[in-house]
Image 1 (cartoon, rainbow, N blue to C red):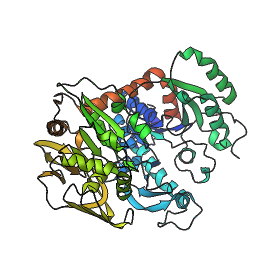
Image 2 (image 1 turned 135 degrees about the horizontal axis):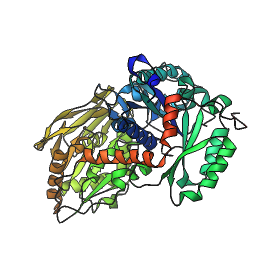
Image 3 (image 1 turned 45 degrees about the vertical axis):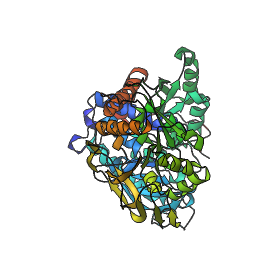
Image 4 (image 1 turned 90 degrees about the vertical axis):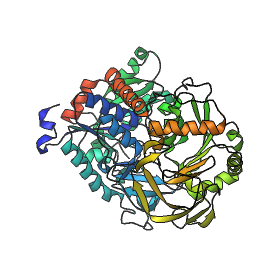
Length: 523
């Protein structure tokens, strides 16, 4: 890269913002792909997302909570994730409120109106003053640019959310503050990508438009030559080039933000199940509870040849499952009510009585216990759990954020913890990480433990034995290696289908001069 922009010696490194015409346009995967392509060129690169709304989060080594997408982008960049990469994380607790995590630590619960402005009812100093966070996020971005050659920023939703522009800190707000060029990604598989590119640009103010340097078409199927006339017309209308047409490719999703639809499209779970190593498959049913969090925990199960993972929301869908997983949730009491309303609680209890395997992770572990005292998350007070594990849970005001490591089932294992519930284990037949096992029911707060290959195989052997399946885990499956292959595929996608020379010039040289204004502009 251009020496004047190198981060060594205190100079500021280059930057680029990857925005999108819509949510789920592919910003996360494009950002990860650019990071992997750059690091393979010897560039010291870091990802950044000023504000993330997600229930899929991760704990850094210094004990900070950030979005899992940024952790995976850091892996793509081959750097250790830090709180600087995602200074503001919003964790929804309902349709109208979220927990605000600032620089890796929770600072309060706010309504959407309180966070975006217009209300004095918020419980922290940040209520109604989201613009005050701009200084924090720009400081974080500046520090990353000081210590790296390049920082690839990811936007959120669309930069043309004209109702929110005044307090925007994640799209054009951060681009304006840091004077970095913007590339807009559009999902052509949805249809209407030309209108989306043009409309997004035309709804921005003159000052914001001056930073939009080009477009990237994502998820294209077919003959790209048929698209070229449209790309030329788009250039004529906007004065901006399309810097790449990325083909539709199965299995390229990383740990993105929220939604079961996103989860089911994820790389490992979307891929065709490899033939089993032994004589039988193993079927895993994951209960899609409300406010489901860190459902990425089951990716490691789906990576095993012969393991079939699906998400379910009806009791009858548990009938043929060899393992039922209760995943994490931001609403443990609400999820319990949901399980009972749908008959899933009774179905899980019958499974346990029959000695058929059940695994609870974090919120799922808490639901399997005997009693919950919650004056923090739901404020429901005393609530009965499913009573399948000898565990009593009390919700604490302070959140546990940790990166534990240890041994279980004779194998080393690592994980991470994100929870308000404090579990008191009063019995059990066997310790299981920080939780316990009773019969074929297992519970732990540890997310990510199944990514430890030896431990995962040992656990699946126990599950297969309890389920009466002739399933044998393949001896050579490395989840870390699969993730690396996935990230390399993202880098290949950018290298082979994007104008990398143009992207590099934007990163090195900044915003091009003379980009034309597209009327009408912001209202």
